[in-house]
Amino acid sequence: MKLVILDRDGVINHDSPQFIKNPDEWIPIPGSLEAIALLNQAGFRVVIASNQSGIGRGLFDMATLNAINDKMHRMLAQAGGRIDALFYCPHTNEAHCGCRKPKPGMIEEIARRFGTDLDGVPCVGDSLRDLQAGAQLGALPMLVRTGKGEKTLAAGGLPPGTLVFANLAEAARHIIERG
Image 1 (spheres, rainbow, N blue to C red):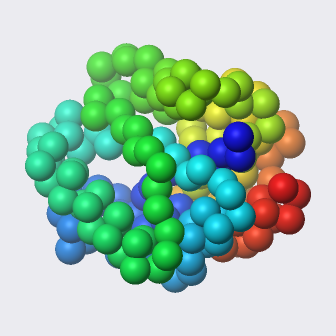
Image 2: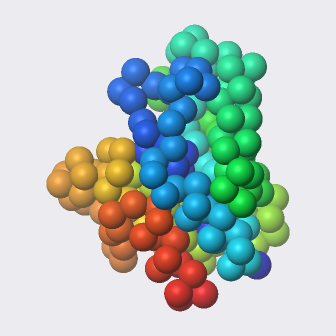
Image 3: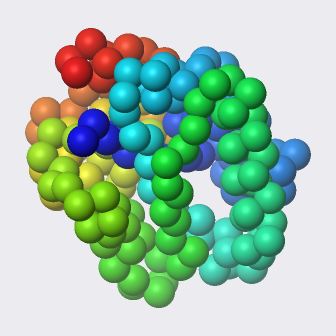
């Protein structure tokens, strides 16, 4: 199975230090929806793994998160793409759960649900914790410079073998080329 794991905020859509708290704040990064459609057309299943601590912080509720994701799904469908599954962690860092990236619980659940190991599976994110969560399980860490990506790159300490791309569109072209 050809699988790609994406973070959401900062990879697919513009991020905000104040969180994406409603559908109006969810604005796709130019080219990101088309990149997902290209991945789909090339036979990849695309899964999102996203920390959503705004729920645990009381900044928005599940209905609002669902409305944000519904907007993403609608806009993606208009671009000819789809998300095959969406996984999220609603907890704050203080909850010390196993699913909040950089811990690998959410990524392990993706592997279980899709019945695959993650060796070499592209795991695309804009923060160190996105890359660490997948790399712990053998996924291929890919950093995009959008969102927090520039700060993440400047801070260093990336997992070994991390590939760096300008944005999701550039990462998707690389993923498709390598098969």
